[in-house]
Image (cartoon, rainbow, N blue to C red):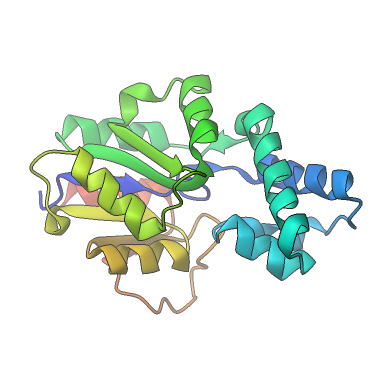
Length: 217
């Protein structure tokens, strides 16, 4: 097996987190008196940095932008972390990786308190060696997070690491960090037919296909 460390994006890769994300947007919109956007538009919040999403969808700036993000994260930590569903078969796949002696990690743009609560709420500690979210006091890019995860696992090089993700932001982060990338299309970012303008090892349609891929590597 080439890989010793598999890093996962969270939203759209490990779980369908759209209910919690959508409700976070509704909460911030309600408090700030903004028009609630339709769910189809809310999907654009899944993947990119939160700041970019609020700018693109609401045209916010300055203190209002900061307040919107604060409210969004506030809802996520208090309620949103419970409003998700892990994709069918994902825990079987994680167990498969563990059985192969592969280390696993999460690198997510969710704030650290939220991913901590998700891991606790859904009893996921046995499946992951490390999980890294956004630290508001010391912001990191996706590539920074990937490098951080690698540093926490001894004797793992970039050549032995792969990121599994569902968006161009994941793909760009993997390329910047110098690691391989596997694109999944069952999430919110990539579609089955979309051209991916970044290097990738495979394009995967289902969790079952992920399992099959690693079984023959």
